[in-house]
Image (cartoon, rainbow, N blue to C red; front, side):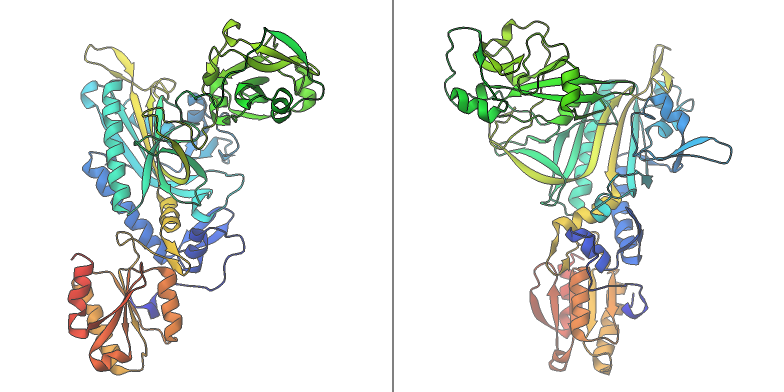
Length: 568
């Protein structure tokens, strides 16, 4: 491609709503442009990168035995109602009706559609296993689209679905997809971790996320310093905590007057006791499909509630803050809530199981209870509801846990019969018995990967593309297009690189040299060949975009040097 013929509208101005490097550089570099909130066009450079990512994904999936299909972008509401997700998914699911008042949704994911595709077409265990995937547009009506391609409403996604006769075979495929995803992300040049994750609205018995490590990531990841344990903060576990101090000794279980002591901090100072031995009460309003209720979550005074874990613990769609009036209507005394004689549902963090010598609220204004023994409570539900903190201990090896940030680019799920059963997707097993398919599902955020790559690979000048997905590998920059010798050499090198199947762009624009170099740095081509005044002395300059190192090469050796650097 010649730059003078290319549609690459670079700009110096930073978009007013862009804060992340990927958002800024992808727009400034002429890769994408915004159509509406959370909706972007892909310009030629962006489309090249997108297709390269798609091709890598496709090559690895196909070699793992997956088969590509393409489902409709629009899904009948009826399928989502059958699976039970139509109301549960929330406002992110865009619903609409056609002229005949038929209800449809714009698919954010396609479990229902893929089950419907296989249903009645795969009828015997002899046709299993089967893994089908697509790379297609999706739509999620985000409340606050932001960060460019990282959180858009319209996006390109790879979603795959496997069908099996039993759980054992599904888990085999699940492991195969984990290994395949690792190959994909390694080929993309990414520094990533595979982490245990919450199943969310997709459902199932287990899931793993593939997180690109980046300071700009929205997700918090928990990583062990000593072993390979890694998990999203929403699913992370820890070893039982070690007491920071000796446990307090109380003469017995009794009520203690604590006027105007309503916070953990005040309670800790009042009794001169470590918050570890205080019982913190967090009251929330749990929202379900058909009701809402007040639920109290108890954890140690120096722990914080992890709301996704807490919502899962009570099977709620989400948790929201409850007003003081709502708490009082539920019979609670804000600031003095304890687990004794509660009239609402409550959950206690697993780290507190059967703990003694605690202090908790007395469910009476200005009073707390000392010497609390949780072992004596009846019908207690213990769940893991606490957020992991820096320095907590690894559940696998006991090493220290650290927190870092990541960008989710892939997610795999063990679905089981979560969709096949309600959608009545059945097959006959080897005994002729009708059974629902056991399923797995596997997603990759394809357009999101473009942004994730740049978040991990950029500098203050612009993008630094890995060679596997760079729009062009070599940028030949002609310093003075009116110099016949420079143009002739540049065109010859351009043709030679094309003959070697090297993706090359020739910057033959009638622009200042500095302007061309800023575009090279902004767009992020791996190498620039600067054809300038040094050509008179028999050499040209080659710039490595990643390091910005410059080297003078005899003009006769330029092609060989580039082929060597590009491993050709």
